[in-house]
Length: 408
Image (tube, rainbow, N blue to C red):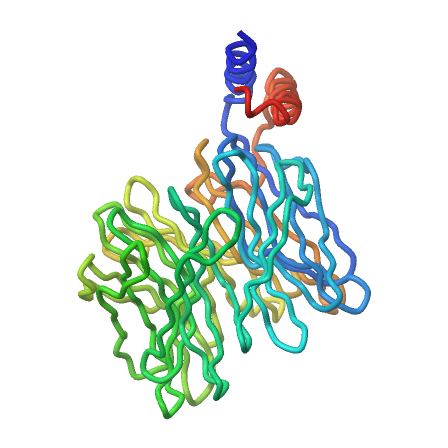
């Protein structure tokens, strides 16, 4: 009976929240410098933001939970003896979270933290390697966690790294590859029949190529692809498309000037190139996040140079399913601002998150915004009083129900 009462109340309060789509634009104040590296939408429609904040004389890991209206539920700072930041986050079936961290001691190390829905520590674990190792992305499968990143060998060369773990953070399998000479994975995804990783690989001349690889569920390589362009390349994000292919987004840079442009390309599920596109201006642009909606539109988030105030602005760009330009929007003020991650939430619209540095680069606010999928107006009519009450009741009831999940 208790189970059905809680379920009915959660559904009713959720319906109360489902009024007209709410669009908001918020800054999360922090002291000194910081950044958001990744965002996650939870099963109940909340948002988790992870990244770093500079506290004292070192970086510390930052995790924030927002409700669907952008109100802060909790904010946690995790401090270690040396620099420590969060790179990514994943939600488990019970509502707990596993945060992928990077610890910097005498060498770089992959560190996992599991926290409950309130942000309280459950366990933490360092994945041990003889030399430095970095985890860039983490995903949750039915029976495992998977991490992609890089490890160093005895010669100090990087190798693309993929690790399979159980839900207690213990290694089940580990694979690494050199690519054309050395490599680093920055993106990770799971399709219907296996894993996909991507990043960059450098040859002996230090020429960087966009590098993608398809793996079985146990990490066995099925195919790999190196993009052939005259300029240097790197991939920062990927998405599995609605037609079963894979799209990759990153940068292509000039060897002479070092300026960067947007790179996006698409492979079929056998690793064959379907199309590639480049977009950019005179100065550098960078894309850090990629998603595709149900209609096939690609959304890309990053930053671009604005000549009006000599600084970088938030940049949101859309392409159609064939990779052709549709529209883009830039917004910002004096300083350095950028979108580091974007989501397509269950309730519709877009969630963008990033950073906003002051003109003197001495302070940073963390920035998060909810837009419609046309990237329009950062301010719209607010929800009704009934919607606010519904959201408050829903969030409160969800928090109170967490200790009783095992009986639900």
